[in-house]
Image 1 (cartoon, helix red, strand yellow):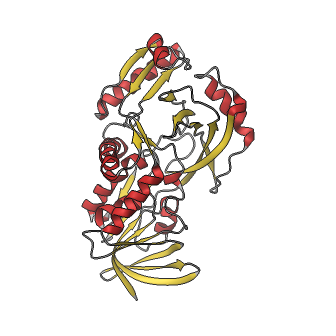
Image 2 (tube, rainbow, N blue to C red; image 1 turned 90 degrees about the horizontal axis):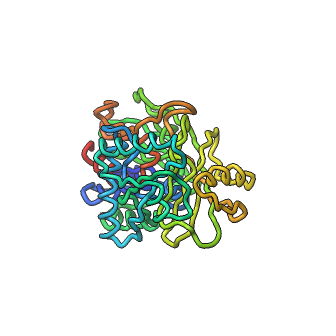
Image 3 (cartoon, rainbow, N blue to C red; image 1 turned 180 degrees about the horizontal axis):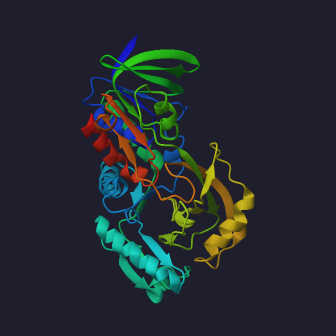
Length: 366
């Protein structure tokens, strides 16, 4: 039977960040990925935003790890040549009734230690972004964008340089505690396999709960709620120089349909919020009308026919429709009592931003 010191399940941003952090000090490190490409799900189907840490409850893991993670991520991108830009984000109050929400965000950002946001009145907003409709705004200069695919590749390069080995098309079906570690069983390229690992990091993302639910002796596995978010691209030259975020909508699980730019200047809008039962990445053209209605509130010159279906992601949420947002769950031996196992649950946004900081927490727990 094959053996490894450290097994990482999942080659998204979290799994690869853990591998980059731990591979050099592990006796040996094996990364198993169910898909045929790294980062095939949540890690590559998002806004590619480096978040400043403005929205999350002070003292929460999301707030702490986003703030730590953004600085680690900017430094990583500089050191490893990953394309990125501190483009800045404008949080916009479209109407007078939203100014109180804007002030709440400013207060929350201060409480989180995320840095001061620059308050703008309607005239100042118009000078920065003439195409944006709004009566007031906050400018977040620490917000940025990155090439998420290049980031994943850079993590893999560092992990492999440290001795990690990546095996694709390999799905772990069962984990069982045994003397000195874990029995691991699954299927690789259509063939069954078994191995033993001294330590295991379950960074399987959308599959993390399924895998954990079969572990004997693991009592707490939070319920997974699949929440789809779809994006539309906008053809032609972007009218914006910053990311544009409206106020978060009440009683929803997202931040509103916002405007983001990639490093090539392509404008895209999204994501929306839809709870689903199965993973489905289709983006239906019939969504153009509701997207256009949401965008036109802050971008009245929108030409709806320039909106084109782009891509879709699925958030691994821990709460359902209408429920308060849940925090990240980093479940270590201190919580579940099983030596050598870390489970990562509910790592949605700002998980990409926080990935290097999460890897530090995981390393400390092991």
